[in-house]
Amino acid sequence: MSLLHNTGTRARRLGGATAAAGLLATLLTAAPAMATPDPGDKPLGGDKVTSGEVSKARSAIDQGRIPGVDEIVKSPNIEHLVNVPKGALKNTNTDISFQGKYAYAGNYDGFTIFDISNPKAPKTVSEVLCPGGQNDVSVSGNLLILSTDSSRSDNSCTSTSQSATVKESWEGIKVFDISDKRNPKYVAAVETACGSHTNTIVPDGRNVYVYVSSYSPQATFPDCKPPHDGISIVKVPRKAPEQASLVGFPVLFPDGGNPGAPTNPGVSPTSGCHDITVLPSKDLAAGACMGDGILFDIKNPERPKVIDRVQDNENFAFWHSATFNQRANKVVFTDELGGGGAATCNVEVGPERGANGIYDIVGKGDQRKLVFRSYFKIDRHQAATEVCVAHNGSLIPVKGRDLMVQAWYQGGISVWDFTDSSKPKEIGYFERGPVTLERVTSAGPWSAYYYNGHVYSSDIAKGIDVLKINDRRTDPAKKVRLHELNVQTQPDYFDQDDDHDEDDD
Image (cartoon, rainbow, N blue to C red):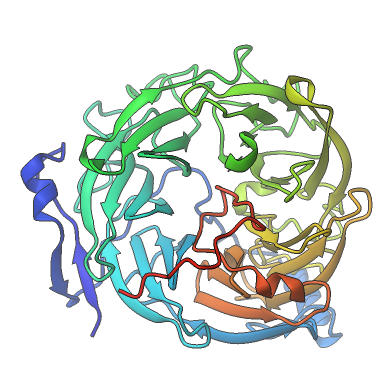
């Protein structure tokens, strides 16, 4: 029977005594509390489809154009090693971070630590119940940062959902000490404006800076009022994480950003950022900020400076995430068309809306510009009941090539090549068929990341999948070994210390 670690505290603020007390380890005897998320990446779905659409989907299955219900299909160069079903945390699976032989997987109910020393048989080390969607995770040394973008009654892990119109409601980041993987300790919480939809860490010697992305302010929210035109920055001292504190809220959009509709119909107005990816080795960051994509300098991590900003008011609806290539002369931005709750991988939507946008970075220093080159979208059309959207992915580290693995919800996992910015192409895939043909349903991979020779995918509904790519184009990546990977904190893949010993706790 699994151990479920409940990290509850009674006080709204974590005191020293509470932090020292750590977690209560209890045997799981009942289902965990369900987090109630705010708008964002929470899968929607549930809408019934017409009988005509059901018939159309069944015909497509019969003709072999889409896989059958829950059927797995894949390209010959993809090997499916294992699926690890959900354990105690039954809500929506979200992001993953890695460290040595461990993977840290977020879930709207908390997070799970897996031992992945044998990728064919990951083992659950601990499960932490801490509802607060969407619970994106980042790790650095002995610290784990957990995002809460769900208005809660307090900052404890026994909190309940509470309206953001109540001043005492809480959203922000939580900090855990993960030096003991079997018993993580909750040590700090920092409230941030509009919560923390995602977080990105910027390691800086004795401190870890956390860039907190959040959005959707409302005049009736005391702690999330417009304008909300920047990001929160939290500083976490490594040796005293209980002293974590907010150190700034830099304004990235002094003009308010993209106004959205009616000026730009179908485009989300910019009121913050959804996700940020940093490249510390180059002092660069790329922000996917609702209606805008930005490139900025993070030489001073407390004072990021915008270098360039782009919009796509024709085909992008919601700038969702960003990925640099290894040479830092390209950025891939993704568009979350439909908000992660609609079927968008079909003929009707087409190949450009809801796609990745590939941008070259041209010029030097503060004169660098983002220049659009092309779109990439999977061409494996999905049923009308399948929520499909470009989502989280990572580089596959091969010198001289730009390769990615990427999650597409029910579009599955795509392996693709953008070495030629103008002619991207898919070179491998893995996907399951529709969950059902009767209603629109969110399922499939939320995140798909390459780590030390394998692809680890966090499936919204089915748990963790582990894949192996067997392809001459990606095989060189198997030689690259990382000691830590937060995909939104991109490493220099080819400047690693091969003599580093992994933690065997």
